[in-house]
Length: 338
Image (cartoon, rainbow, N blue to C red; front, side, top):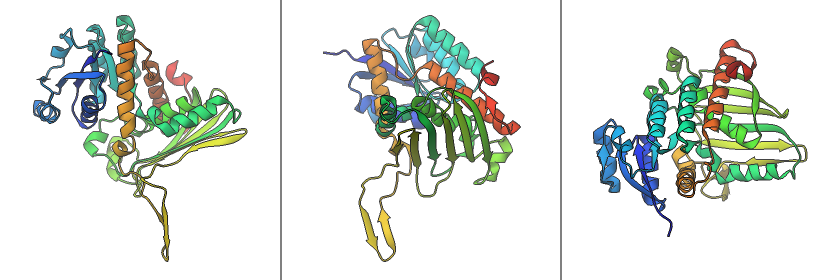
């Protein structure tokens, strides 16, 4: 019988609560033995909901527990790097939500601590676990369509997050588009140049802290492939997630998921099912799959499917996008990485 991995969760906000529920209900290989949040009342409510016996306010208490093998980090981004370093020093394997940090120096320090300790680190790029995006990659990687030529990604949220969140999120490119940057690398390979343009078209308040709500980003890949990403923080018709990899001998596309494929026609025209209206609905299976794979990697001593390097490179591209937007020019990644 396969042994269970004792894991603790740090952070019980929106994403943390999703991971807690999945670990308890859908990952039988995991034993979620404790949770932590600086808002003790929030953590206690989550613990009571899912029958978790141990709740702490200071995560260092969990790191001192020799029975806990792994930690899931779903705190605010500005705390990620320090918690990663502390977890690594304590010999705990780490699953951390994206991004690893909002500056590359902090990420370098965190990854250095992980390497020194010899622990595993998985970054929460949940889109990689979507069955449709995985199938597109499999088709392209098989070579049956020839070399890649154009990548197109559409990522549009149904509505703006709260301004409180957006002010500390790192901005559009490091919060929202970072998933697309990782997906671009997942589908095609390394990005060498970025050109980004953007606007504030939905809520003028974003201008007060230098953020955007609408953007188009052009990518150039090392193999010559060209990519485009379009982002909007508000698509009134739902959570719009599409991808295409156009190749020399064909194309592979992933369209939006719907509850069904039935179309009803009447005098007003044809009507089909709405697309999901929330990312947690659209990617619910992905959140389960990513933590399942993390637990199995810890249990069976396997490499994690997403790595610290993946987390670092996505932030590099995000930095290049911000630099490109502010200077209104293409930016080579060497300008960011040196």
